[in-house]
Image (cartoon, rainbow, N blue to C red; front, top):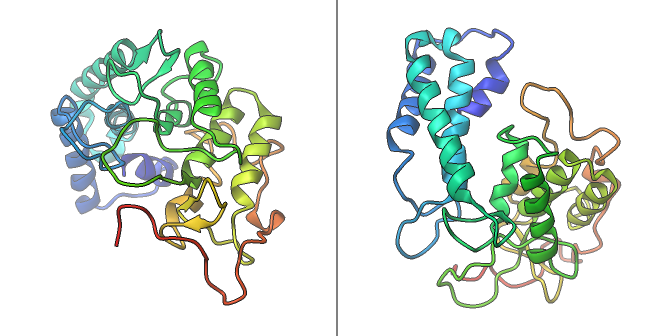
Length: 271
């Protein structure tokens, strides 16, 4: 939310008192609770753990709150927020990177890969030319990607029955992360692969069955669309220039059945 507010209000658009109070509260919550384990954005089954993506989002919230501090009327909180933000960064770099795996991992001191760590260069935590970012992007591209070129969320056991499909959101993340590392041609191929699973009016499902290639899960799925176009924080570079197609209209799908609905099974683990 703070990242969205930063993108909306960074050009000095006015903030009303209620919004300022709410955003300050979000930043304070991130600063107070970032050390707590959780279930991650994937709502993982089992005990709570220290997921890297969750820590990264706390860092992001505080980083954006600091940038918005004057507009929020919270300049008196900047010193504390900066200290906490820097603590989170140090923890991620120390406990999130696993040299044996050769990548940032799903959890602190863990060994499993997770596509959500691809957000690190996208939100400005590390530059795309950082060797650890390059290694992580390569690990996801080679170890979480199926034969169709689509990306699984993670390679960890999650306690759910059946086989999970690949996630279009994660595939778009990989495309953007590749673009940040300077792999424009590879980024474009990955983007076009994901975009090719849209129907004739450009709508995307949540997942794709790795065996059949059929769309599965929620349809249409908003988060499959939200990462199609993403710029570097601050607008320094748009990810949709020559590296990535500007519209799903360029890559029409052939997977829209004649009855006007997606074919394929429901998402595993859901009724």
